[in-house]
Length: 398
Image 1 (cartoon, one colour):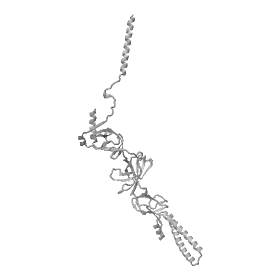
Image 2 (spheres, helix red, strand yellow):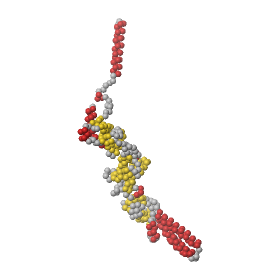
Image 3 (spheres, helix red, strand yellow):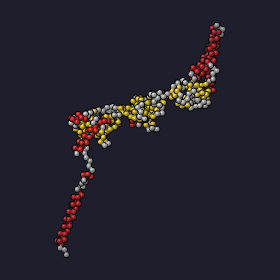
Image 4 (cartoon, one colour):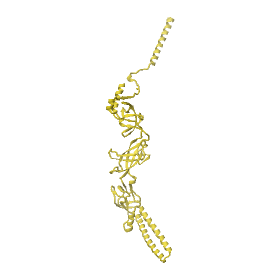
């Protein structure tokens, strides 16, 4: 039998051992786990990298700087374009009466003058119009002769005055009918010279001459000799390629910067040096569903046959920024990985490397939307030398 004193001592020792173990486990849990330096995920605090040059280095590198000055600049916005005939330099050929084509005088590719006959149509309707004119002209000639005869009789007191008044009224009606007949002939495309020719030679075969309203080139011929045509049927097309219209297709974002009157450079897609400068004539505010873009219209006079309708061209518009912006030369920008940086002069021979946020590329300049302040100066040459020296400076600080 174990004495009571020994039993109590054993229980006390067991309790003390359990308490020590619990305290040790609590101490282990409260101690942070430390990783090797190579495995720690620590983000080093961003440090400013500065480059200091002595007088000899400054003289050797001859670093130039430009001041950061907000200003309105013109952004070059590039867009595709297609060439079309100018609306005022294209003519659809048609005849206002039905008939049959009896003669074709100009074919596709032929150059024609304004007023030159393209084809001739034989038409019963035209023959009736001409007959009405000839009859009205004959009636007017008779009435004028009759009026002169009656006037002489009235002067000699042989005929009463009412006879003169009646003949005068009939003569005026005949002259009105003649003017109406002439107007109908003019409406179907007959010139005054042709009307006089028909009057001088009434036995001539009445063919309606369909003439070109503009000087240009026949690009479309849609009828053949002997073919019957209806009134206002499309017979062909003549264009004057000396002036063309170009439709440019700008993205909705770029279109917001464009306005009528902005300068545009028209160039060949193949990258040739040939180009023409003009201005934006108009901007269609609705989105073009086919191209998912805003249509920009401009007109230019062709030079040496370029551009021609149907060609594709490249347009470079110079759009002014709506507000003053900061733009620096492209030569001032270096890259640390994919981050654009510049070297800001902080004193004589002292430069600070600074990351910037860039925007549009404006020719030989780049817009800066963050990282620079007005009045600061950035290096525009020897940037790679400063970049190399900044690396040595950074290594030295480490």
